[in-house]
Amino acid sequence: MDDLQTVQTDNSIPAKLVELEFSDGTLHTRDGPHPYLQTIFGVSDKYLRRLFNEDQLNEFKTDCLQNIRGDRNLTIEQYINKYYEFVKREYQKQYIGAESSLNQFIFSDPEKPKALWGDCLGFLQRMDSESVQLMVTSPPYYNARDYSQWENLDDYLDEMSCIIKECYRVLDNHRPFVFNVGDIFDNDNRHTKSTWGKRRIPLGAYFTAIFEEHGFQFVDDFIWDKGEVQTQRHKNGDRPYPLYQYPVNCYEHIFVFYKHRLDETPYPCPICGCLKVNGNAYSRVGVKSWECKNLECFERSTANRGKRFSARTQLMTGLQQQENLVPENLLQMWRRDIVKFAPIIKINSKGQNTLGHTAPFPNEIPEYAVKVFTGVNESVLDPFAGSFTTTIEAFRQGRNSIGMELNRTLFRDAVQIRFSKELNTLPVELGDGK
Ligand SMILES: C[S@@+](CC[C@H](N)C(=O)[O-])C[C@H]1O[C@@H](n2cnc3c(N)ncnc32)[C@H](O)[C@@H]1O
Image (cartoon, rainbow, N blue to C red; front, side):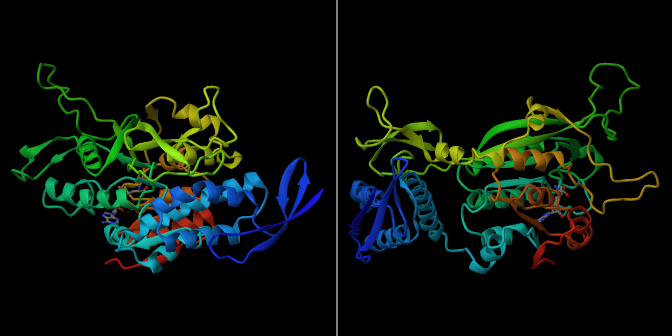
């Protein structure tokens, strides 16, 4: 059965003749917005006006009316996506440090891996807020490797703190930062530079405090059991007496910190798409949830309560696609919070460095992080890319992959050797490093 109807829009968009037809009991449109879009705008109008000014509302409605097509369910889905995108764009506009050419380079061609040579802090400060869905990295180790440059532990932690603060801004909301770091045995250089100043430095604990200071929530600490290691730490085996004994350190931390920025913006009901919602509760620290108050909504509880949801549940539901299924063997491997796999050994029997980098982490870490915390086409950033292990793995998994590395030699080695050898492709490059 065909039906003809004129849809009058309330923001001066030319009224459009929309042809409707019944197919399988559903309403469809051929070349115009579905009339249900008008229902959404009608029910939501008062609430949209509380949130957006006249110009913003016009811009949002125009975009919806021009681009949303399909049956009622598709209309609701597209409308909700547009709403989230619009709210995010408005939020991003509040940060004035963003540089559009850099963001275009990073986000406009997701099929190509991006390799940025330079100080990650400088790049991060020019990136859009909440634009990356996952960060995975291991930081430069304080004084443990040849690229270290800090006078003492405080200088090192201060620099890391500035970077982590900026990472928090750039990371999308309700998303994780997977951070691999080992505790070390070294001199913090606070009191003396001689060997008696050496001690076990709990970097994992210090970094946890820094992450929390900048708003991250500690969620997990996987202990990466590295098996037998080369460390000299256990030196007192020849004195089997009290107070002489220390264990060999053979693990590193793989932390999972989440960003849950408390966002009080009301979001539309995922069932009916309308913004007639009331604040329900906080489902966890930093996560606001909502309840649909639209009595015409298609889903109500037996007690006649509306759908309850949050931006976080909406995000998690959206990722439940076949293409994002996490393989069973990976889940099994990471079922417990102690995981065992071999570290990268890069010094061969002749004492030569075979990988050209001093501290690469094994592929298992980014493989887990990318598959468990992102969906296809989302963006993954490693601010301390080193040999670009994360970037290569994220690209393999179909993510927009971005790596930043300060050291020019490491950068060139990775770009010229690793990418072509392992991926048969080269990344697009951007560089302002020393
Ligand atoms: C532990 S390594 C990362 C290893 C990496 N996960 C891999 O698999 O190769 C840390 C890296 O951070 C780099 N780095 C140090 N400070 C930096 C900065 N401010 N910006 C970007 N990279 C930096 C170092 O040159 C080093 O390559």
